[in-house]
Image (cartoon, rainbow, N blue to C red; front, side, top):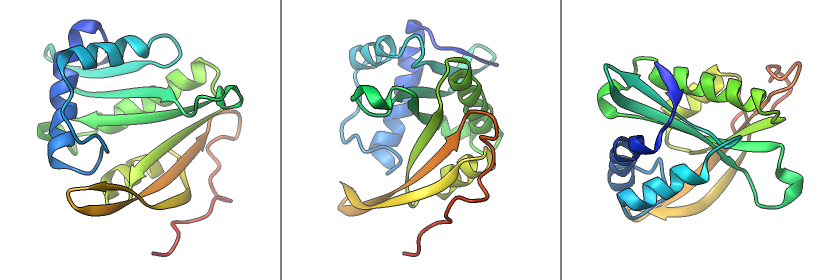
Length: 176
């Protein structure tokens, strides 16, 4: 079941997120979040900038969020997505269900386009976004450093209005 996150989901969301902080390059945070910080993060994402959770048998197994893309007002119709799934539930369609629900939520809130910024070595997330109609529109080279490595970020975009699923004119992944 996909539903809106509640403040009492903070601990489950934090646990999923902190595994990625400490073991992967899928997030650029270097320190684990506290429960208080996770609650603040949830409270900052209400209304149009939503957080959704995937729940099975009363347990949160994944979450996704819509965040402001940039602070300046001209970007207000663009939103950035994030999707995280508990490692025990990878490959079962949870990420796709969350991303599809985020896309519909963004459309329902009147956003024009969604951006996914994905670490270049995260092939699963790039494939997930591609399957959901996102197109690769750029690559930011060596913009992050974690675990002693420079990291590239692939930028993917999905137009949300009529005809927004047409990615045939978008460029493919830039050569490395």
